[in-house]
Amino acid sequence: MRLLRNLARRRLRTALTVTGITIGIWALVVFGSMANKISALVDGGSAYYADKIVVTDKSGGGFAAVPMEIALLDDIRALDGVAVAAPQVMTLLDPETMNAGMSLPDMVTGEVPGADEGRERFELRYAQGRGLTPDDAAADVAVLGSDIARKLGLMPGDTIEIRDRTFEVVGVLEPTLTAPDTTVALPLAAAQDVFAQDLPPIVRANLAPEEIVTQVIVYPEAGTDVDILAERIERDIPNASAMTGAEFDEVVGSSVAIFNAIIIGVALISLIVGGLSVINTMAMSVAERTREIGIKRAIGGSRARVVRELVGEAGLIGLIGGLLGLGLGAAVVLLANDAGRSSGTILFELTPGTAIFAVAFSTILGVVAGIIPAWNAARLDPVAALRYE
Image (cartoon, rainbow, N blue to C red; front, side, top):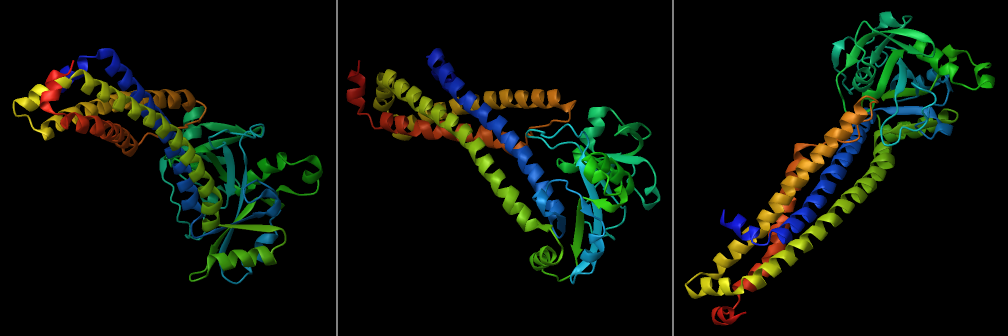
């Protein structure tokens, strides 16, 4: 309570200092939550690409949905070191959505259930219903990611229309915080038909839907060097690009790391400004309380007590600013996510670690910023301080 009374002596100055720290922590919480979401997406991609090779057409740069002839599947399976090769089709759920901004676009994927022969390690769980089975190969059924199901308000037993074709929803995935949340999974044959409709007429006229895939998932044999196998695929399969987990981390992870560093850097700059405000506030406080400090020293107060009291005030300023900034940042994150939930655009993920770090950082910032003024105050000569006007 004594610390609060001391801070209340100059309410305006204290309020302005707290406001500066609050803004910095708000920026740290908001931008940090954005960085958390991006990192979660990248981590999900890393987990998906681990221990497998994704083969696509080279003209797509490893990510775009470019048609490949399914006949290449047999050539890939014949390569040394390939245990399983599973065909897949990927295309946009809405062909007019070419740019999803900072969120993942809604996608349609098609695969043959069980084609991985139990080698897939990226586990999916179902909140409702079931997954696709081999019996669904010729059926018009779909499994929805959690974001799509929430956005469209669908559940097992409902139907979803894709390219003027109606599919029955048989399952809804639990949230994964990555690509499956924004994906509609179809049997391979159905996805091939959907993808074929998006192709230019001249391409569609020369390729039957059942002859098309957009990527092949390769599971190496035990003991096979993944990088060497990827090089072999690119050398022996015409116009093929082979993406390994290490390459995914290098291409995407490094870019995200730079982006996250920029985001956190902006927030830290705001906090540094807040720290300078704390130093200014405490320096002015020491100047105004010089006689008070002299009296405490004259009646036996130790230097350590003076330092503790002033550093405690500075830390309290940082703590109050941190808590206010966290509350404001959390409100912005929740409101933004709620506003984007209907469209499946979730841009922020506020974790307990981010919240604890924000408050701890602001408190430590206040303590550190108050050390110099407090030390200078403790070194004042009691007699000189008593004479200070």
